[in-house]
Image (cartoon, rainbow, N blue to C red; front, side):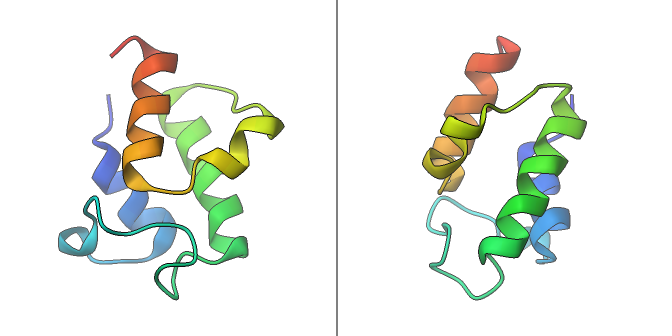
Length: 75
């Protein structure tokens, strides 16, 4: 299974060392609405999941995404 931080770094075009629990949607310039959509697609592809539209707004931080992916993948 892909490492979440690597998926986030690629989707947000950030160095891996910048990915931590302090970043979130619109808290850093790179995590804007366009990159949020790209991130959702990257998560779906990396983990083989479909993210429901109503869940997308809640996936606004590294910790929220981590919890969601763990719940959806059993991991």
